[in-house]
Image (cartoon, rainbow, N blue to C red; front, side, top):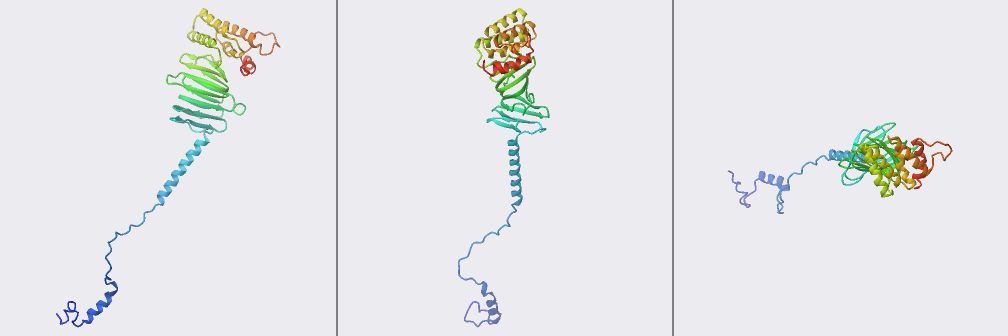
Length: 307
């Protein structure tokens, strides 16, 4: 050790030039007397967020496209799909030709949209359909299948309900529809309804029909569906004829024109002639007219006016 080794312990000892040079070099980093600061952890490099932003933008775009497609509704030759209304109604625009609204608890299947037919299938629940009249939508183009038959639009607005036991009711509020059941086809104009069950389609009646007529028609339908005897059917026909009083009641008589029994058709037309007059206004001496001639006559002169 040199004689200067005790300089660091005794400041009165002469300074070693080498130590003095070292002190001068370290002076910029010397402790200033300020309190010591706590050590901070190193800052991590920022994560890349653009992939998440891109994914979010794509999701928003997909949802917007889905919403736009739902608002736009169905288009010709669209793929088959199902619509379900759980707790709230679901509206399905069909271009500018029609609109279908599903009530809660309803499942409706869109089957196809071809050049000559737009077809749905209602398996459960209730729908309200509004279809533009001809010539914008041809009669028979818009159809809804059920397990017991098919609604064929004639340019109208209607409510169709299918219950859990498959029983079905169709009620028309504007225009008219035809319902093609397993046993027969019926015509339902605005203000009337028809019921369908495993036994077949009931004869449509207007909502304001007299109770006696409704009761007589139901008895007539039961005997027709079950194949009752001619005597029994004859009695039921008499009950219907006795309950027919207004021009609107001719809706029942028109359906009797299409009965399989000649005597039913004969007495029905006779009562029609008494009630509303012949389709040609008496221009001919014919006593038997085609049901289609009667249909056009009654739709204009009896059912629309309220008779």
